[in-house]
Length: 451
Ligand code: SF4
Image (tube, rainbow, N blue to C red):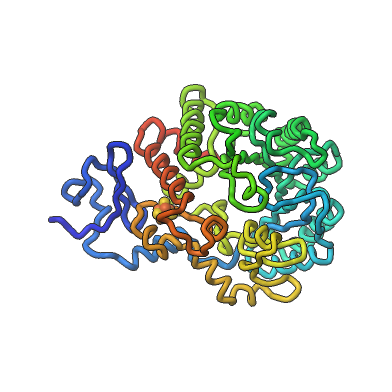
């Protein structure tokens, strides 16, 4: 009997991918399939089973959600670097967060009924507001102890400094470091020079050595490094991956250049969607071959998160869904659904501001229609007509701030969206990997072993 299967189909290379409403998928040489022709009979249903859809959403989006666990605090708008594509348009001068405001941010965060909180310090360069950073860590830790909660810290820092006391503080306080390294020195220095005009590359390398030595002693979590892919990165994918491995980093992150802040003025740094996808594919295939042929464990964070979601049925908490997973706080205490929204606010456009830590409680924030709008937008796959028909909609997300920055629209127009084209290409690659027995083995080891 041919039941009434509802599924979405996409041709990838010479095979058809079929995805149903619950996130089950199968490959077939046929464009149209039926339960007779498929060995996976559970893929089909006589009708759209709303209960099953709700239960799969509840699993995917944590039906017991109580509030965001990740909180991104901008300690200063000042920076020691002068990156040509800085999304926050940071400079040597700028506003710092006062400790009074930082305390209010921590008090706000601890109103959220979570057991664990992840606090990420960012800037500008947060290490420039070192005294407030130190006091805020101590205050958050004492509040966590008083309330019997757990708190974890990370910091987004350039590492382009020679001051050991900063790095020692991170190590002693188990603060996970996230930094940026665009590749070998010629690539990195092209866009990420210090405000003095000098290179910070050697400091990053020496600080990474110190962090790795602390990691080996079990004192800290592995540091993260992010590459921003620009025109300078093209054809250098192997050099970038090899550099990361030489620094002991096996989690490579190949981020797109975002059209916010100073980057908007540097059209020469942007590459086309096809160029990005070509670069991304080559880098991924190189990493997969290193895994398979040389036994070197290395993976790309973005693709790992996508594969995790597809294979596990859960939305990985590191996907950073706005409001659902994270909130961000500006140096003057304003609350935003994401750090990018906070950056837009810093540029004078407060369209996404949700409130202020000195005026609003978490309960008030969460009840605001604008907060609920950002929360609901995480289901944009079901809100945009094009996404609804796309087989990747269960796992894909084009952030609202991106639509707003790139297309001047909160909803975005996926027909003309460059981000949509990139996401389609990345999902095609993810499913090509899952279709290939050889590569799937490596991808599954990422899911088991990635941190
Ligand atoms: S943004 Fe594009 S790739 Fe993503 S779900 Fe929508 S149509 Fe599909």
